[in-house]
Amino acid sequence: MPAGGPSWVHEIKFDGYRMQLRVEKHRGHLFTRKALDWAHRFPEIVEEAARALPDCILDGEVAAIDEKGISNFSDLQSALSDGNTGGLVYFVFDLLYLDGRDYRPLPLTARKEKLQQLLKARLPRSSRIQYVEHFESSGKEMLEAACRMGLEGIISKRADAPYKSGRGDDWTKAKCRGGQEIVIGGWRGESNNLRSLLAGAFSNGEFRYMGRIGTGFNVKSAGDLLRKLKPLEIKRPAFANTKDLPRARDFHWVKPKLVAEVEFGTITSAGILRQASYKGLREDKPAKSVVREAQPAAEAKAAAHKKPAPKAIIIAGNKNVVSGNKAITVRGIAISNPDKELWPATNTSPAVTKAELVRYYESAAPRILPHIVGRPLSIVRAPDGVGGEQFYQRHVVPGLQAYATPMRIAGEAKPYFSIDTEDGVVAMGQVAVLEFHPWGAKKGEPEIPERLTFDLDPAPDVDFDTVIAAAKEMRGLLQQLGFTPFVKTTGGKGIHVVVAVKGTPKKPLGWDEAKAFARDVCLQMEREAPARYTTNMSKKVRGGKIFLDFLRNARTATAVGAWSPRARPGATISMPLPWSKLKPGLDPAEFNIANAAKLLRAADPWVDLDKSAMSLDVARKKLG
Figure 1 (cartoon, rainbow, N blue to C red):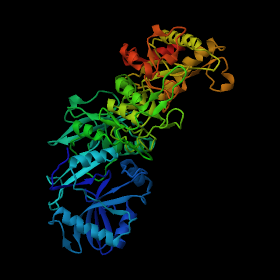
Figure 2: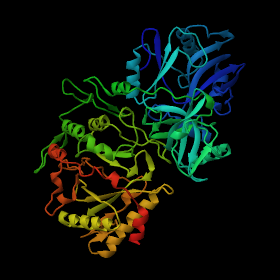
Figure 3: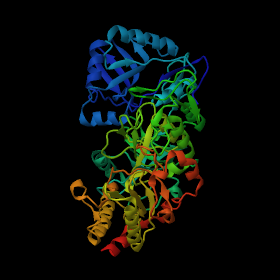
Figure 4: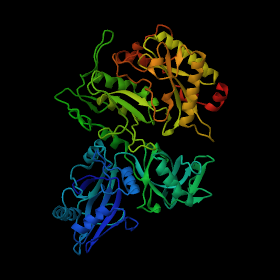
């Protein structure tokens, strides 16, 4: 938890490069923590400072601000790499010297008061050099507010402390989500193919292993990393705790010289990062100074999740206002407009309100989570219900940072969604998320497929009994190939047949390989019964047939998740079923939110799905 009390003030934490700005006789310099002058890397900031400011030394942070007003380290890296630094901002929070006077012995508040006067008098409001406000409110409240806004966290400082270099007891930082500077101790992959990084940090002079980082690279950043890692390659690992290292033949060890910024989902008691994502290299910090940092405590995260009853989650551009006593609270999350109908009544089903959706998510979260946790996720939102506008969303937005885990995807500028907690599932109901669409990826490793989904999508003139027969035929073919197939309704007129897959220790499975195999299975069924099946997605040729959609297994493609509602009349659910229940006469509309309590009492027919994973090598040979 952050420091508190009347002797402390709090500032927003930025996700950028800590820099010291020096102006002397109208010449500017920007020094890193290694005392390197990066004036040439941030020319616009330095030129403005040299032109407008007197002789001074300032302390601050250079950051890139995204369209949501939040500092983004990946955007900063991209700006530096592309030489497009005109939009970067230098956020100033301290004054060391001004016109020959040493301000360091003065209290923080006195230094900041003079700093604010200086910048206000010399710079326009639109300046690239901005003063950082401080707040005297409770540190706990300040952190919770920062987390709800999707910010990095806060820095707490003693108001009466003089300026001191380095770490000390006069300031602390508290984060909203797991983040850590690490030192790269190796990588996994071929000589020209980076699959993951091996992370570490120093403790009592020893370099300790902290886990793998498997996401956040794109083709360019991976190539840049390899060019910097190869000259540092050594024969044996530099980690002190070698017994904790994973085993594989394609590991490459390097001298612990390169510092990187990562974010992650959790950290184990042994100090191992889980679901870690690469954000960029830190060239401003020496490797020996990187230690394991204190992370947000569970109680701090939980407090940030909770909101007083009259408040609600705020999504950019869409404020849900709670009035009077209409709000309800579920798992500490305020639900606005709980009586709003998201699914109107039909001839065969009752209306479903937002409160009923949230209660469904609360009860079904243990069933939903295993199919979305650790995987990139797209969601379908319908703020005005199924009769209003519906839109897909796959990136984290302000207001949901406390509930959504960002996942860095190679080639994507912005992080994807991932929901990893039951609170996160419930929070999606507050913002009218009616559908979850996960990748079929391995948990925490989006570049590795783990599930194949065969989507049996009937033409309008094909009845559901025919789709049931097709699903059983698909099951038979997959069983002949050695798989254990699982089945669910789609919440519409289709059926999904799903199998778990895996690669080998020497050859991990790739998306192109997974999609190609799924295509070949579907082509086999089409060849054997061309009058019943087609793999052609054109509606002109689908009349009277079932479209066998294998494209759900491409990289970035999704399929509706198990137990997810559908944004369709009747509030139906994509329902996992035991094969014994898949009989002629079954009506998929029976599986809906209104019947959820009864459905959830039954045993979970998909509980062993992940345990059934099989390599494609043998199946490919059998398929021919």
